[in-house]
Length: 640
Image (cartoon, rainbow, N blue to C red; front, side, top):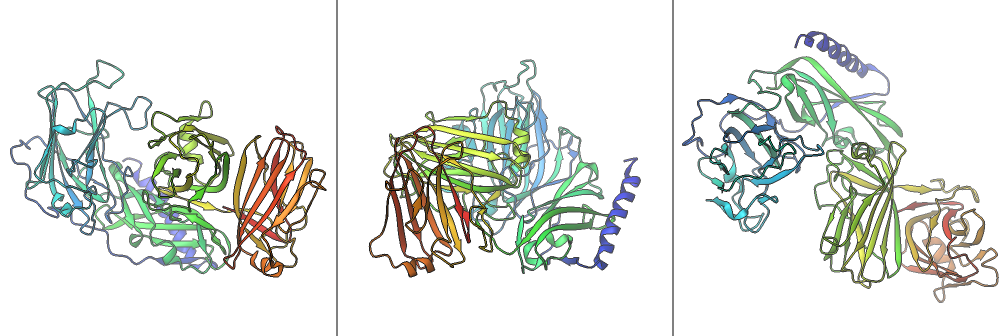
């Protein structure tokens, strides 16, 4: 605290400088109007005093909040302090649990995580499991390899996670974890609802050092928030006094990466929050209503911008001695490409999905996109779902070497490049360029490969091989994301459709012998001529060409002339086709037959009609030296 005055002076000067920018040309100062997030910190939503039967005389004041007070906190996003509980010790904690009055889900309360004596994310970190306050025997209100769900009792039981009554869990909670009898007894109660877990057998020791018998616990809210009151064991980092606290710094969350030109700033940044750090290392999330924003320069033109936020309140909501500031870059654009998820990276779990794409036997579908993430956890990135036409799943795989499902468990192998630094990988995933290869092997198995160019310039790979129990004739995939968003924004050519001939080329895609590789894109054209659309180029590794084929039944090259057979659907109306090509969706499949190649183009025009273009018998080719790429003229392509 001896450096507080000097630090405050620095922040004051910086904030004052930002405030004076309101007079600068091309900047914009504004507030987002929203309800006040402040809540009283006394007795809470429901329930009586809940410390019945416990000796609370030794409690230490520990006053802080975890979870966003607008109930927006997702799972594994915010955590309490660590409380280390030695053997033969009883821990008692008190806190107010705030339940969202409009939340329909019973799991939106809190879970207590029980682990060994290691920090989360440490190499030796291991969990006994988790016990949540709600009780749903058929759901997941407890989990973990060392938690026996049959030992749970509760006087409020939910059959499903949408049962009514979640509000009964709110109020002042007394939480105890008792190790004095050799086992572990957990009791959670608000005086009305009580849940207990009674394990009489000795707790296993998961610590690397066998002489260390301590366990750690911490709380994780979801869709709720907690105002801590007291503890009888001092947490790591110490207790937090109840007195008011000055803000020291903050980090902005949920700032969109891109904003469409013409969008009002109040709308674009309405969901932005800030994590504010106060004195005594206390943190709290505040909503946009408590922040003053400035965009530099203003949002009336395209290009990179800076969002600056100023916050000037104490922990208790009084006027701060010194305002604090934070800034994040974003971009104003005139076109928003196909996205999966919310562009402020707040996408909840299992809420955003791309289209399902069917993959035939021995076919690989290639997709390219940009992955954006809030960076909160490794899993806040893209996921690939393999499933049937009826949406039943074969497997789900994440970007970070983890998956599940009947076709994955005990069957698939997951591998990354050697020596991956996971912290560096996680930091590199925001804005990473991703190419995925999803393969239907045709024998009841599937493979997924992701090649990721991180924002650090490094290439990361993720392979899932041998995903089983697949019906090769009923095989689809799609993308989803949590805590991030995916943008299918890979553009080939000039977006004003002035692309000169042979000036823009995509990356090569290598097709192994006996395989078909497929990709999809939007085709945009100036419409001046039939050839002002996409072209497919078949080459060797040294870039020498086998053949070049246009979208309009024409091609050339040593392996094309006099050999290939170009065909379209019968009775094509070429004038209608040309008009339908602007913003058409094109799926191109290239097959390596070993000595010959086939190219199939399926075009869904802007008129809703489907047009086909096939080139079969392109020969000769070298089975082990065969690639394809795209180019365009008087047009541009956006890969999906």
